[in-house]
Image (cartoon, rainbow over all chains, first blue to last red; front, side):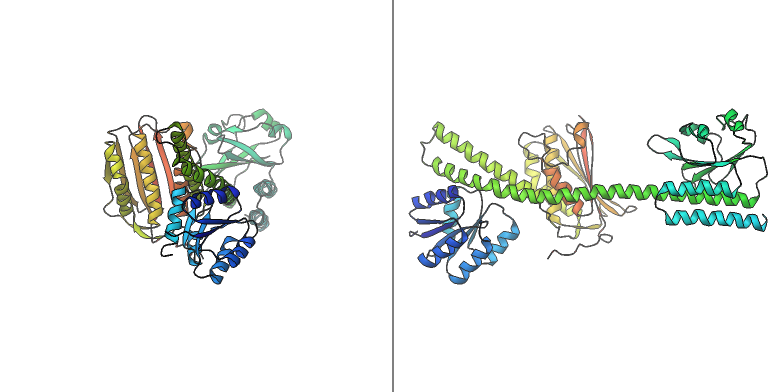
Amino acid sequence: MKSLKVLVIENEDVICNACRLVLAEKGHEVDISNTGKSGLIAVSRNGYDLVLLDIKLPDMDGMDILKILKENVPTLRVIVMTGYATLSNAVQAMKLGATEYLPKPFTDDELVAAVEKACEGL
Amino acid sequence: MTSTSFENYFHVIRDIIGAMHSLTDLQDVLDVVVAKLTQGLKAKGALLRILNKETNRFEVRAAAGLGERYLNKGPVTTETILSTLPEPGEIYIITDIWNAPRVEYPQQTWDEGIRMLLDIPLAVEEQQITGLLRIYLTEQRELSKDEHDFLKTIAKQCACVIERVDLIQKQQSHFNHLATQVEKGSSLARMAAGIAHEINNPLAGILLYSSNMHKKVPKGSHLEEGLKIIIKETRRCKTIIQGLLDFAREQEPHRLPVNINNVINSAVGIVENEFHLRHVKIQKELAHDMAEALLDKHQIEQVLINLLLNALHAVDSRGLVTLRSAVDRDRRKVLAEIADNGCGIPKEHLEKIFEPFFSTKANGTGLGLAVSYGIVKNHNGDIRVWSEPARGTRFMIEFPLATDASVPKERK
């Protein structure tokens, strides 16, 4: 798999840093945004292959962020992460164009597997 | 009966029935009954006792025209009231105050100027006597047939009101109980969602770092062992939280007409292997004439699997778990029963087993039966348990027949 440009939009630093550690070891380049707004700005400026998006952020609803992301960059791969996994929000995320759905907590292998699956063909 | 006395009685009946229909407080109605009867019969007074079902005693609930001294006699045992009492609907006339077994205080009665007593049992139809109306007259006289009919009518009406108020109170307390349950349920759902958010985030950090570090430490080292435990325990937390969410989430069942025998068979199919491994026998006695019930078969399957696994844990190896199904056509219910010959549930635990987080298993979440209970109740069904320590446990679930059950509206 080629090296990916990944953005993690997540307000908890521990999770951001853990994701960066795991994905950097697989050769990917990882940036971090702690809020929805800064995440949207980062995506429009830098261009990413993949976004890891937490559904619950302090400033914006994760589903709204997902909608804006997919409207602006339809080819963007998005993995939705959530601490409150329900079937209905998984379905909603998929309908809005999420590529994968990752309920917290997850292991490094589960993260890597989700990333590989989401970015198949890149 | 003369026309004036007829008018008199008619007014009493009108007043009493008016009170019964306009007042919701039983006490007000009883007060009107004794006052109006005393007035209508030109009696010395009247006393109304009602059976307190908890103490099984007849307690004075209303009185008119009697002295304080007489009223302070307190409750009377059921035996005294019921002894020598005629059939409900009849009137017992006492003229011999001094020798009648039903008169407990002849001296006081005589001193009050009372010379004749009428005892009228209160009962709905021919059922249990729920009260007794006693009327005190200052002179002995013949009762006309009309007066008999008049008193019987009042007694019957009175019994109906007592029964109705009793029913209303029961329903009210049932409703209050339900309202508290609903309130608890929705706050629990909110709390569960909050807990899931708050706990799963730190768990995500723990699991990511520990699973990542696990790959970097020497195989077979203490570090590797410790990290393995951290990973395993973190996953366990995740399972508990998921269980809590499943329990708290209001899952509207997707109900279709289903033969519960099929659900039983599929549930057994899923757990059969577990039973086989522990040499526990499953015996099925399923009804051949099973009728359909409106069930969400996945949810009911989950309930049955839950009960089957509990039964499996309760029996020693070579135990026996029996599944029965039946149709109760009189009550219009479909029944399924899971019985084991295992260790049984101690009496003090029986009341708690459906409570969330109650568990006696070392690794139990305490949510299995709580979730099952919620599912069955969501189907307008019922779940009951009988258990005897060292003999076994029997769970029964029942649902209305499909033809009776109303299909809930689809959730938007």
